[in-house]
Length: 219
Image 1: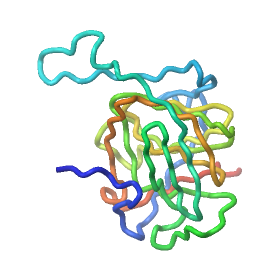
Image 2: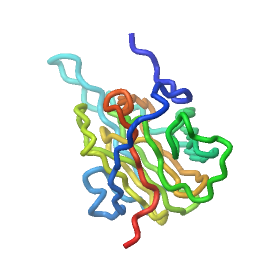
Image 3: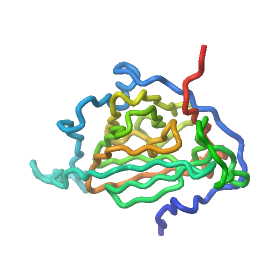
Image 4: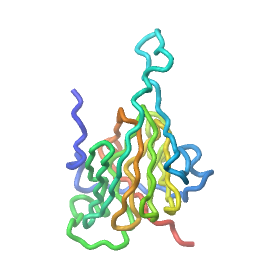
């Protein structure tokens, strides 16, 4: 029987190689395969996917997609070299990653300008999309990959958003929580109320941590 993922005590080794994830500046064109940028969160509706049929009889029209959306604040905060997340919309608390390998990450360190997140996990929601809108209007990063359970490391990218707009991702898009490029940020979060989740423990499946940069390289 599958056990719930323990996000506050990740089941990962203390030290692994790092796999570099390319950082892409979020524009209308660069996010098109994953979702879209959001200028007006008040009037933005997320997609809700109809419940799948069990066999050959179809789901009745107008049913199976009535759960609607849920909304709250997603808080992302660095505590030393450990990045914590708290999603009020679904009452979730997480260790999202670290700035160094977990066995050497110092939760008491002072970090003014975090440079990376070492990511151990990705997930997707088959029942609905998800919107992140920055309340602090500061830069943030969201790792993403296109749909499909055969996740490949080379398919993962990180979208860098300048904070002037939010980011919406379609149902089925691999992602993780939203990463602040500052010590702490809060985001308006809207997502499907059912909140089904499919997970991939990157550390276990691939033997690496994803090295997600938080600032674009300077030329």
